[in-house]
Image (tube, rainbow, N blue to C red; front, side):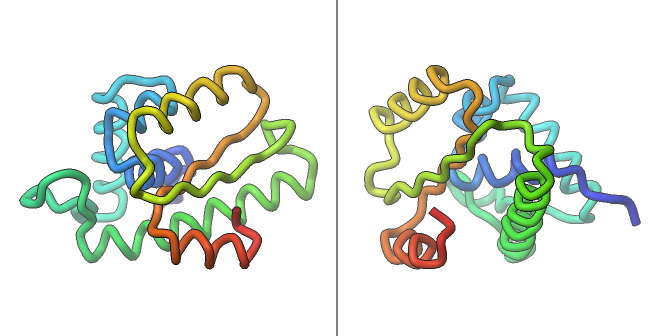
Amino acid sequence: MTNVPTDLLRTLIAVVDLRSFTRAAQLHGVTQPAVSAQIKRLQTLLGGELFDKSSPGVTLTAKGEVVVNYARRLLALNDQLLDMTGRGDAVARLRIGLATDYFEGPALRAIANFQADHAGLALQVSAEPSAALLRDLRRGGL
């Protein structure tokens, strides 16, 4: 078995959190086809579909749900390791939780503008229901 590149996992998380391949591409400063290619590569590495193509929008398969949960944990450990050793790319890290009800154009534009103004800041945006955000906040994840 080969290693799973963290950049592919970060792309997956962006697609899931932003609920859009296009928005994930904008966040990472790449094209939508580049994001699609990364997801396809990840699916090939993991041997299965992560998104349900028969459902509208971005809907995970059962396997996709499991992969996203593991990806979040792996990336958190990866980032903690880099932070602890001082080898992280970013000067600082900001994790924002935004209720899915408010995750639309104006909020996305504000986040994109903030990120553009703070290039040295690693920004992680999570769009979830309020209960999940509150749980993550209590655990120190936001």
